[in-house]
Length: 247
Image (cartoon, rainbow, N blue to C red; front, top):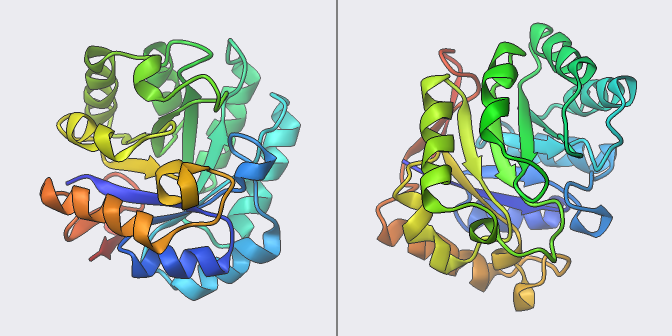
């Protein structure tokens, strides 16, 4: 089944997302960019509050593609207790030193989710190298939030190929990018592991606004209507026995 990932900025929003039925709590500050990072104190407070009732992910921020900068950010974020560290791969080509950095992080047991930007490059050629680097999952998103949502950049066939190839490689697959409630039936049919929301969960449909309990309820209701998200099991790592059940 497809899980609901809710991006939150702080402990208050994390409480709201948990109450509203989010299966994955994702820490991100939209005011600081596509994958803006929240501060360490907030990451630690949210992981303590969630206490493994749900998987918690956190972004490392909109960083330059410097191997050392990314390596340091991955270590810092992981040390805050999150289950998954999301790393955005910005630019128009991914260099070998970045893949080597992801490999090193994965080899130390850090579960890295590589975020690929559909408005910057074709994502499919990167899946094999990212699996070889030991990433736990891959996620599609948009870097430029004014460039339109996911369907403005990729057609259904390409999205289906992304999810299918990711599944074959044993990667967790996530779809995001200014998703709206109307996108849920189309995307859920592809059976990704999760759909990521921020804009549709906020007051007025503005990603930099606060979360709205009513908006979360609407998204949750649509997922439930599609028969998705109930009793979702998100593995902390493919093939591992350590899992978190989100009810």
